[in-house]
Image (tube, rainbow, N blue to C red; front, side, top):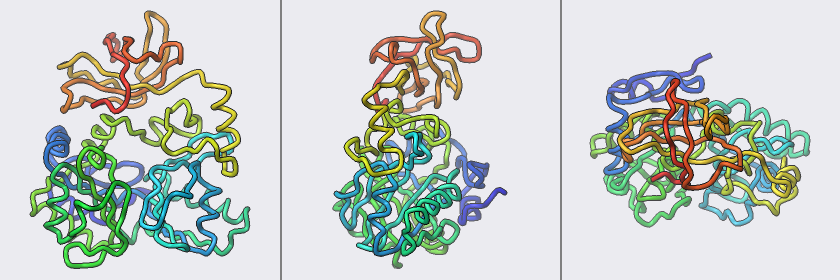
Length: 367
């Protein structure tokens, strides 16, 4: 069943072109995704990312439970800090999802999960909770009762200040303010984070709040000069940074080693779902590896998911994500190739709709 994001009517009001993503109706773009992309890199854009799942996790043993559940050691994630991406792995170290955790207090954590997995992650987490005997821990899905607004770009701090949030330029990456006041009302939280790369390059903020307040923030952000942007621009922005998309660049058949997804894992960690197998894979090695790819500058060719990657006549891999980068003025992609062909700077061929196109292997980020 297709669901509507809570602010769909506001998206339409702002000119959003509505489409379906991961079972949600939301804005794909607001007229010109290429301009929305460039605007995010050079000015400021506002995204309604309420299709992302949101959980509230409570209980005296919540830290102990999460520490056993995820791939990364959470010991250094203090109150008011986010974990950065962490993985939910199966017992074979396959990637079920990458999620974000927020340490609110000793007995209260929040989580943001990917849109396709809102129900699946909840079911899976609860299964382990019961199996391990954490009956005092409660996981509440608040996705349909809240909104998540992302304000991203070099001028994002100015918009946040215009909304009355005074800590914009002081908040460090992956820090959040619980109960912060924005636009004259209390939010759930404001975090220095995002999925465009601007949270690292310049400024990026995400605001988790109730539905009515989210609508107000979305409208006021636009009035303050933020351009509304949709999921197409968000996808090309994340691809430039080399950020992986669940279900496209990684899934349960993919392990973090071949995905080169180092940030969410702690290899020394042993007591978590999938951790023993992950260490075994790391020590044994992998046969394929994720790489970045750039086509010739000015070439408006888009390598799609599944595009074959060739060394001569030999198929050595496949593209998982591809797009035209307006910032780089060329086609870009990521994909998996055999380790024997994964040399930075080497060139391979992409079979784009029956035509071979030269692509250079590059490291991440692509910009």
